[in-house]
Length: 289
Ligand SMILES: NC(=O)c1ccc[n+]([C@@H]2O[C@H](COP(=O)([O-])OP(=O)(O)OC[C@H]3O[C@@H](n4cnc5c(N)ncnc54)[C@H](OP(=O)(O)O)[C@@H]3O)[C@@H](O)[C@H]2O)c1
Image 1 (cartoon, rainbow, N blue to C red):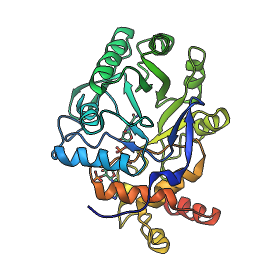
Image 2 (image 1 turned 180 degrees about the vertical axis):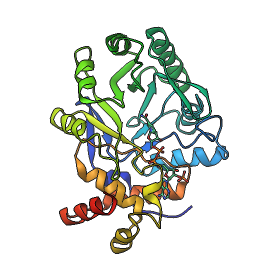
Image 3 (image 1 turned 120 degrees about the vertical axis):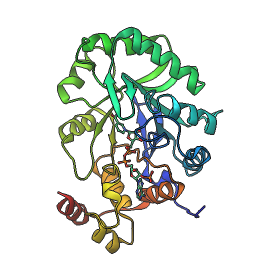
Image 4 (image 1 turned 90 degrees about the horizontal axis):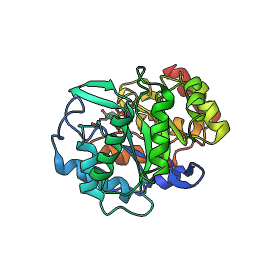
């Protein structure tokens, strides 16, 4: 295992829902499943090692979902990390069911969301889920019923904070009519900034913004990719630049880069200490733009 002195803590902290503190640079636990986010990982012990190393290096926000595996990611988190450190926040999701490898189907019926919450509680081995996110809005179910179910679960003490995933500003506003929304999770990275208007609303209202695909599924990590030259100039890796850009974009941004490799995890966490000038930020945006 390579040595690193860089801890995630250098990225600063954010309070989810104004109260639950997390270190901003987190970890996304989708990659520790099988091909097509289906079934167990090829390297079970390696997956446990990545999760344990993340926490050892100061990560306090781990993102997962019932549908990753399905079940596999949550089960590995429990196996690797239970009993959990007091400051560890596990964010899970429900609302996408799996019909096969690489297939994701929105299901937002209240009884289904409630069932998935109960199953995640059991798999993770917790009495309360720190952050429960609606993975996708099901277009066939009224939004108020879906968010209303999450709110009921919150009132019952089964979940602490509520989040949404892949929404626009209007959908966020509609959900806020029903419940307090602590976070949103949308596709956002140097190469895809479509969610910028949503990020601006989040920043204005203190809502955590969790960019998924922070490395564009690895495209931005490539040593011969669009960030390669800049990385050489900074004596950094392309991944570190992509993550530093996200961290500097707004104090409400909570990146959750995914990896099944301890080496890549350590590489990514070094972004916590990387500062970019305004000129460097502009140059990165031009390079990927
Ligand atoms: N809400 C949603 O709908 C949604 C959708 C997708 C994902 N997510 C969440 O977002 C998280 C992140 O997404 P993601 O993992 O798919 O994409 P990502 O973080 O953008 O990229 C992960 C990919 O980059 C590679 N990688 C990571 N670090 C690297 C490094 N330092 N050098 C070279 N390659 C590197 C990984 O390969 P190795 O494994 O080989 O390192 C992996 O293939 C997921 O884990 C999940 O929690 C949410």
